[in-house]
Image 1 (tube, rainbow, N blue to C red):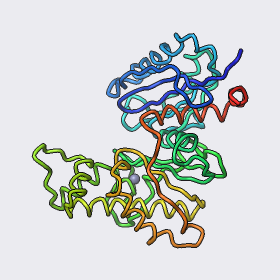
Image 2 (cartoon, rainbow, N blue to C red):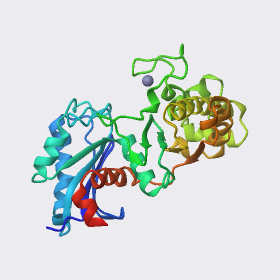
Image 3 (cartoon, rainbow, N blue to C red):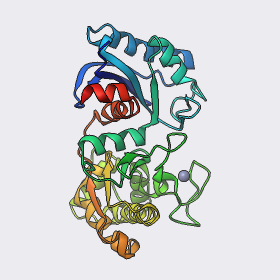
Length: 317
Ligand SMILES: [Zn+2]
């Protein structure tokens, strides 16, 4: 059988998206269901099975040689299980076995969603052509992934590059993960908004207290809003600089809702990087916005399946 496609799944707290993807990263067939995140694990799995069922109804399904899954974390790729924070019905849920069974035994590649975004950015986005890169998603949380030596580096459990939970403030606020002063505790969208409100920022007449509203206020010159983005930029810069110093990345890519804030984030971020990334081999480090859009999770899951499945990769050349 000629298997030049892969099936991709992007599993998050709000939706389960699926696609059949070719070797050029094109999404040929799509399916999607809302994630029944508050229901029991089998109900969530049924939604996954429905997405796969819709894909397998396509005449192109026979060309799919593997399945790539990017899932909200934590994931354990070595065990084939997922325990997404926002899907309490899934704790060490054997997703890889279940998807393999639902697809008649196709090989299944599981990675975390931050690693999936990284795979997408390396394949088609801002990290393309970079052999050593850190890609981040800064939104409700802060996730990330690494490309090292030209290859995606998911690590043994699929979580490597989880920059949101490295500490950049030793005595900082407690983080839901159990540590203190994590990058996420300072730089995530909700924490940018929380800090602005605590410091006296007053939202507009629409009452919008999102990080996007803080960004709009910062662009309009509100000093408290500006300061909250500067603090987030400082935390991101410290985390990025630490990563660059450890493994010699030359580019950091930032996606997610906060990554769309533009100069309000990137100007103080680049300035803060000069404070923290000081050694000769990290001084040329650049920071840029992500280029892949809402399909990044699917594209990245497909990339992981393609690179780990030699038959498909060969067929797609
Ligand atoms: Zn944390």
